[in-house]
Image (cartoon, one colour):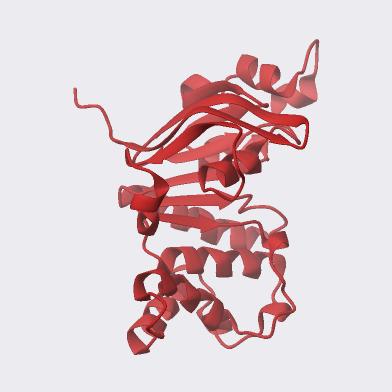
Length: 250
């Protein structure tokens, strides 16, 4: 049986903030064509893992590879959707302008976006269900609309591998449904999504692969193998009877 290709992997990745270790020797492998959820308690290093892989945080040890190559060799094949809290939403620009920024990597510094790029941005807005917001100032958006704007910007890059940091945080049900629909489409196209997720009750709904993280990898693989009650309890350091916690894990 042919083994699936690897979209990304880390080897011995360790990160510390000042003297506080956050990640310790993380070995992770994500096959192509899956939605991989990075799940763990607050402070587990979930967002840090993504940022270290993408070179936004400097690791102490280890490295990350994408399609068996360093990021610099395949940067255009990798997209990133950061947390909405990391953006200055008071900056005077429109939703369409923000999404069009996703085409800059293909254009290079000497070319400006034209009609083709604007059409691509509008198509991405249509896919995320916010085409009617194209001319809206970003400061006027709700939390869910902001997330969908970020997702549209990532989509217009047309990467093979998407990293999403807490895409469902603080959003309404309609936006959640729109994002889930996009995730299913990407997976059906054979693309790969790695997302940080915090809601244990919906992990299986959104992700077919799961990595449980708490400073180290507790378990990683297909959801039916990795996202077990025992593994989740270990990752969240839950001991003894806890019916409420156990009910979150289906």
